[in-house]
Length: 134
Image (cartoon, rainbow, N blue to C red; front, side, top):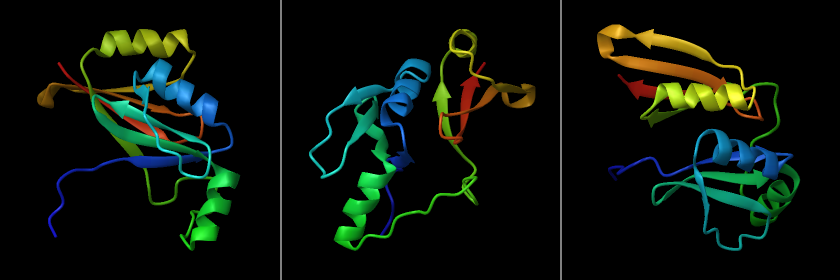
């Protein structure tokens, strides 16, 4: 069965609103349609694809356990999972936004690839990589 594309990732959090606001305000995703799933959460879109799902830890865990679906356990880090990457179009505008929201970031210039990378963390400690062709 060949794969077509990566569809979405799920962030489990104690504060779904702060997590949503980070991805809306800082990264520019858009809040969109989410069907009733039996637990609170959001689907955030990049163009027409709901690339990020956000769910509240306790209600998602209770719902999944009831359905017999395993749930990740809490930990101090993301374990073997290191980061999520997005492509962007304007590193300077993005840096201005990060400064506005007091979000620490690291910049990595890759001149031979014509690339600027920004690394930052979401409110849950998930590392985000932003790539910009320059």
